[in-house]
Image (cartoon, rainbow, N blue to C red):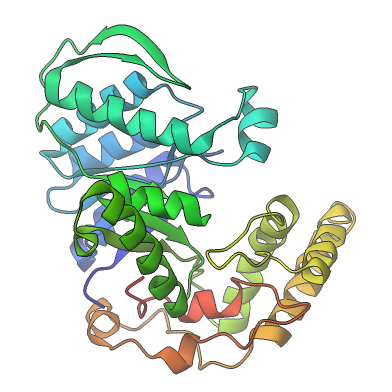
Length: 336
């Protein structure tokens, strides 16, 4: 593995994240990413990280194009980029209807168009300092930046789950952000990226493929998997309708309904819920080696070649829930 970063999506408070990023830089991590959801404000945290570090790259994973306006995203990105001395990477995405509408009270429609127009507006503002845009989802009469960005262009990554969004990444993005992927995912994604790159007249090999893989640092492997299960259960409940790059249901019907019923009873017994939910996942996916231990040095993980046998999922079948055990084993190994 040539490049390894660390990402935060809740749990730690803002001050703790800043301390962790400082430590990650000393340990040799290339990048640090902060999600936007129910934790602290990602741009504020990254600005604090920028002031406390000097080398590590800093990014958003991701900024929702529905929750924030395009000019607001551009201003925030330019601000963190300036404070960090040009170490910022902007990760954007459409998020999901189940998050945007009920949690933020914002309408959700035409996510592909919204992402495309947002990226166009951000790049225009950074490069020219002003923008006017009349589009399908965004209309801006005129907006001016009252300061000069440090860089006229900032790397923009786009998160993708569906094939169409993946192709859009190939057309307009500097990188793609995946989640809970395996080694096989990268090959499928590259095909979609090539399709989009061809439409945009770009070289698909210049688009960086990254993946967010859930991890838990514990004394034993069992404790680590136990810590990951509640998040997986919630994911199964909320996003069971998502489709992967090959068009199959992201969660088959049996696995989806099982996880949904588990989460519905979580208030009565959250521990039993997540345990039973993920036990079925483990039974369907258990064919790899042990998870990389937390006490292994970063250089050991980085130098270790990818091992397809250790992360390859079993053939897809009913009741097979994607993204549990192999995601943990893929940490430090997959270049996806």
